[in-house]
Image (cartoon, rainbow, N blue to C red; front, side, top):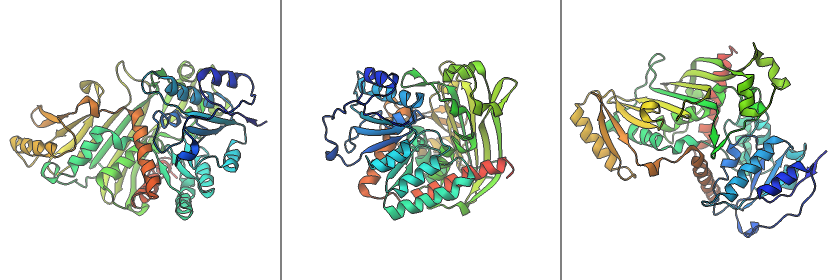
Length: 464
């Protein structure tokens, strides 16, 4: 049975509404009129915490009234609790007014209501291709969390959705937070400085020009609280395998750094090798991050010797316009003390390698190094590096010699924006696109090429 909920936070109201079995309540209008704003968000089935992170900050051109459509259950409750946490925090609180509809017909209801003009999708990925297509065909803009698709069988549907978006005059965009990380920005910028980096080598299958490795953890803190993951997150048929999930970011960075603002296409991609392997999650570990005592029925197919086999790990080697790249992602249960998710990245140039490390030696902070300096004496490279850093739009960048043949770039804390804060940066970028009524001409071809790469790699790894 469908239920209609019109909800304004705070938390006490959320809990009473969610626990009462569903009574209607009077909507309270926020101080700022919706009509005075250009953008009106619609959040659909927010099963992933990234949906809430889009609203960790407020935006001048976005209405505080956000319509939410979802099935009843723990996913929507956790989402509303996170938004309430942002609304009630002591420092720079937000003022979102969540207007919630709960019911099994939530998506059809969203389309019929047309309560906003930007659909935010961040949840179960199994139907994301369908949700994107139907939203775009209804004339709605879409801001989608990665991945947009998790199977190669959905690639054509995604490509058609981009064509429909162009015809409808709406913008379909995915949330690529890693472009805003400071060491990644510096790596890209210095790789474009020929006096320091030279030029990117093409590399080979055994010695790729670009290597990117990402390590993630099932148990983690989000906005200061332990993350409760939905049980479906461990089902790759709903969340997606590692080769099509986190690798979306890594493939995006390869394109963005190596072929900046260039129009790419699937024809530029050649998958050379790909493999996948599971992370084994015990029932105790599963309970620790989901709160559930047993594995749900849809995970039984993946349970062996009492542990669920989650194919969240993968590696691919491919060439993009002749440049070889190696992408790896690994999921562990929990990070070591003081640690968290980590990122490793190397770009190999004719004069040096630009490498990002984030291990214990870096105190788990992403740190950029110039390594394997070749063709130049160390003092010559130092002079070129010093000159290059002074030309960048960041004050007080410094460097220090590390070992016999490398330099470490030191970055001020003010430039170290957290992963959570990156969502506001991506959203602000998207809002700029909406204001302009268009995106750069390379963005859509880049997204199409990216998802062709990830889903093709998964098919390769499965022997399809």
